[in-house]
Length: 233
Image (cartoon, rainbow, N blue to C red; front, side, top):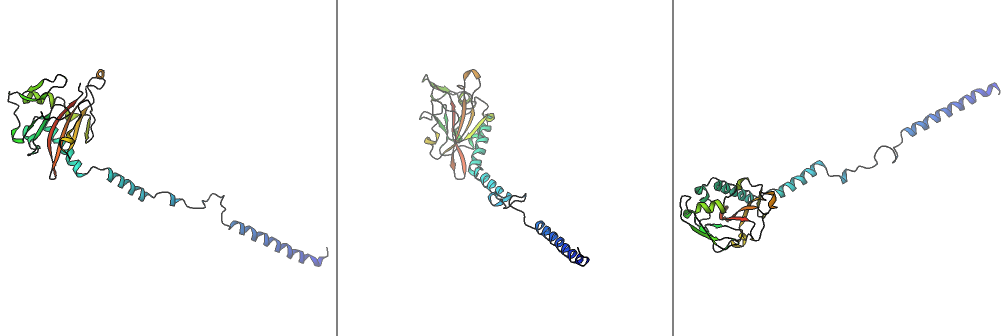
């Protein structure tokens, strides 16, 4: 190569090197491809935000919450069953509907033979007078007992205030004698205190319930029936 050609080739080599460096910079500045580690699109549109999830949960809880009427019914039933537990007839009479009185039903099905007492006419535990309360299941014999004896056998013969099952307007204990309180008192509500059984060998045939039936008097619930329910023949 002639000496005078050397400067020309040196210039060409410098241009080529500069072109190569420029191409490398273009690759590094290019946008990431769809197969790179960076997501192509956000998925937040299909996933509920924390705020919307909290709102949905709040709405669901609100719809499941008991109404004021249900709360008042539960509170009334609790106070009545405690009055029965304590044999507090004064407290019990304060819950009785003044017009309809209080019905005592020895079995789940209310009948015309049930005894009904106005608040001021409740019998006394001290009285030895025998009262006819209806007829015994199976035998058909008259149930003639003092108020105390009837109470001990057909009202509070178990510690119903500690019953494992307490339900409002949903009957748990079911037998041949069918509870008909809502037919007898249209528009009424009831609370059942239920024991599923006491002896494993009885296979659940020894269940017992105390059912309190209430009617609304204005904004208040008033007691109209004390029903003793159990397995019947």
